[in-house]
Amino acid sequence: MEFSYSFDATPAAAETTVAPLLAAVPGNAVSLSDDEGRTWKWTRHLEHNEPGPDATTAGYPSILQARDGTLHASYTYTLNGKNVRLDAQGRRQRECIKHAHFNEAWVMERAR
Image (cartoon, rainbow, N blue to C red):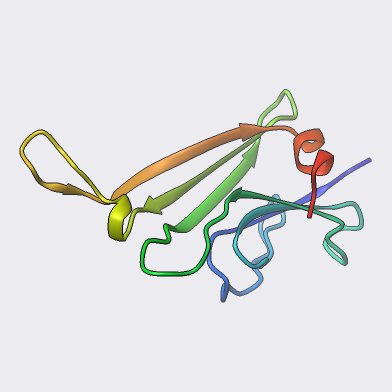
């Protein structure tokens, strides 16, 4: 079965058509489609936070499929509120780049 992939870290993102197919889904999640993006049957969150002042945010997502079929997603991850950490010099460290490595089965096993 061939899949299209969706990865979005921003609730208001517009649909984008690139290879692999990326489309807007609410939250920081990856979705799979087996009909070239007409429907998205499986969605699994990479990050999930309750809304509020301490909620983390994610943005600038990117996804690719490796030769072995696994998926690599990367995105900017921003800490807020009580989750902000300090480095050794006491400076606030809020942003980093996260990388997630998974396969289609992982997305489908506990989807939605």
